[in-house]
Image (cartoon, rainbow, N blue to C red; front, side, top):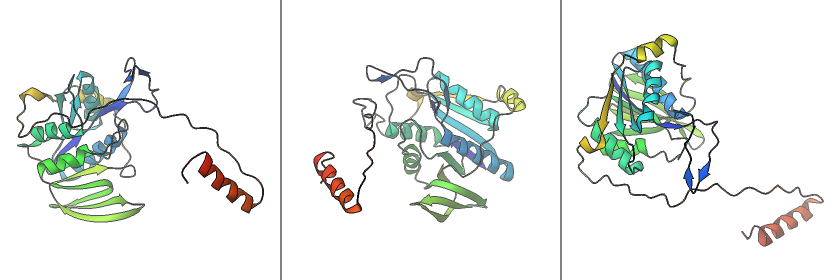
Length: 254
């Protein structure tokens, strides 16, 4: 099997976000592989070990994003591709266009990506790429089994589970519960140094359509601080009356 894994480098989830003039300050920040993408890497490696083939991890980003690829290679991926996204104005629409240009013409049976990024949380890139490639997609998966040219998949669906059978090739987005991502071992880290990383530039790719971003970030700000909660006392009837008055006079939702 030829398996492609889309990954993104994001802020460490323990990092404190600092805004300076409406821009997120990245100085001294520790970056990691987007946690949901780790499930995708782990599942790809397990499927490769079971069915044979190779795993290629792909990312778009600045030069520092190569560290995320090296970590994925140390986990067990075979090859990597980095598309230079330095100083590029990219949104989910344009990222999917760029990835499609990279993937088209390559042989693949399966594409995996995280369900969403912990930074912007849009969950759009995977589904958009599937549309660009005109292949099936299944999102938020928690179980997958490959049987020949068919994938049996279980996914989260409105608080329940949904069982899906789909023909390959297919793109899936991975959710917590699918597996337990491994840590890179010391031998894996040493082997990763010798594994190939293909470097591409957006300007060298061929596009059928304009890839100009469709969205613009107008402002970045923290959500307002929440006020302390209020505990109501007294008879139930009096509490209901007070809640209604508060919703009308303070919350102004009635």
